[in-house]
Length: 192
Image (cartoon, rainbow, N blue to C red; front, side):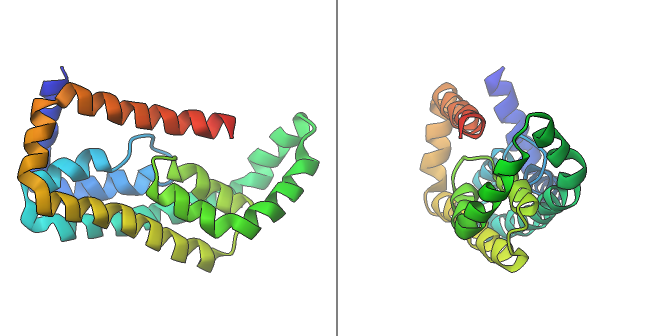
C-alpha cells in the first residue's frame, strides 16, 4: 500500500498541474489541513530537480498566504468561538497573560514552528488570536517557511538521485519516520 501511494505521489509530482496542487496543499496546510506540503514537494523535486527553486517558491508563497488565513481565523473568530470556550472552563483570565507573553516571544514561535514539524497552523491561528503584530508575523513566516522549503529544495537538487534511491529502497522506514514526526507534532501541540 505504501509503495502504491508513493508511486501515485511521484506520478502526481510529474503531472502538469502539480504546481497548482502543491499551492493548494501549502495554502490550506498553513491554516487548517493536517498534511504538510513536503509530502508533495519532495517527490516533485525528486521527479524534476531542475524545477526545485520554482517548487520551493510556490510552496513558500502559498504557505505564507495560507498563514495569513490562519492569522485571520485566530484574529476574527477568537472572540466569537475561542473566548466563550475559555469562559466556559473559567480560563479566560489566563488568556490575557498568555497573550502578553506570547507576543513578547511570538516571532520566535513563528520561526520555530515554520521550520520544524510543529504544526504551523497552530501558530498562525494563535498569532491572530493574540494579535501578534502582523508585520512581525509576516517577516517571521517568510523567513521560517523560506528556510524550510529552500533547504529541502537545495538538498534534493544537490543529492536528488541518492536520496531518491534511499527513499525507494527504505520506503517503509521513511514513511514511519515521517508519520512519527507528524504525530509527534500533534502530541506537542496537545501537551504544550
